[in-house]
Image (cartoon, rainbow over all chains, first blue to last red; front, side, top):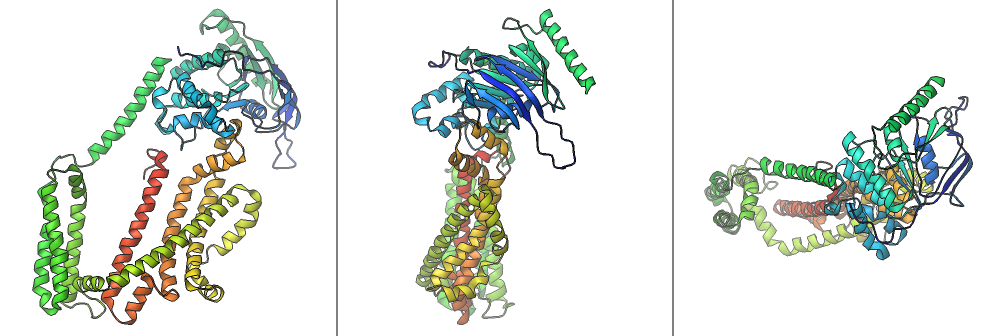
Length: 266
Length: 346
């Protein structure tokens, strides 16, 4: 395994609370009865916790993440990181999308250091850039342009880019959804390793139930129309988890059943 | 984890290797240049020389000597020398393999031109002088031509630089700020399509000097496409790039200068090329009607004296002059957009 950066031993994560958050998108047609994308959603995440949000498409998972990231604003309700209310995007809350969204005009190194450059910290923390490239195992690719990278490599660059500003919360919007099954499983371990090294609070949106059980401390199950949290499931399995253990499979069928019932109810 | 990196690394380097191999295979792979290719140019020159001597009796000896000995003869010596040198120098060999057929055809074209004009007199004089006469008038008038080229270059550089600077500025403003878009877009859409040369009457009335109005017109001609393409490139920046940058803590300056403008660069370069074409046109027209120097002025002045050799001489210089500038802009683009290599086909 790879050595951790020297100054990242303590918990970097921060707690997060979401209280009664609703989000309505303005309907194009005034007569249409618009169902809220999110309806009075409340949950909280402890510092250093890794939770997953699963649910069928259209249940507002991604909307929830955009609200936490500060890229969108709730129609009502309140979001806080630690004790501070979220008023807009910030380097405190990193976001990794399904598409790596690397800047194609920058090399891997320059992509990774983009956050430092944006914050004006590049001259002070230039040393860290190589550490983060090392952390995601891309030493030989620092000066390569993104289109030369495979999907898994590009996503690791995106992770390094999101982590370099030492975010208190890392938001992962189906980050492994576009990868093939094998790369995806390796990347799950990769993300878990980064999480254990840095103890960043992580919120993972996924539609892959196995992934959610394998990775998270807690799983929030969301249902659509209106988007709300249906159930919370605690995952009390020791890591590294065995994907074929009876407990794992029991949780899996429980969640599947919940989602299936939720599907019939609507 | 490390195995994963290795697998993916192997895949990536394999992909790079494959594209390099494809490039090698698509070019002619033989180490030696074929002698037919190498000697096409000397052969064409010998034919052109023979043709020239057979028709040269009708022309003045000065013109004949210049064209035959300095131009065709010089080329012949150079081409034979290059054919000998390429056995030692692989860079030259590559270049010759690509360029020789083109040069040979160009020499044949000169020979055909000479045959049609000085030789068989198919084309009416004095409108169509032969290549020897054109070369002679270029060399006789070299000081004036050099002076005109410098003046044209100065006008072009000033006008183009001004147009690009103002176009980039207004394009970024219109592309980024909704207020600027609201007020700027109608102006751009209504005023922009008017050809810059249509402003000549107004420019003559308003401006203190012909040079000044020519620079302003060239700048206007460049400004429109640069603004249009910059604005569209900036406003079409993928929202996901902007979202990513925001979550990395980027402020407005970073979003504009480090995300939107780089993302718009391919579009901006299309504007720069279109603007360059428009600037050539406007330069020549402006020089023809107002400015009392420059290549455009020289063409109309020579035409006034019915010295068509000079007219074609100036056209030859323009061709070299403009295509050199165009090539320079291509080089700049290759530099700036190097990250696109492999993403799109150039």
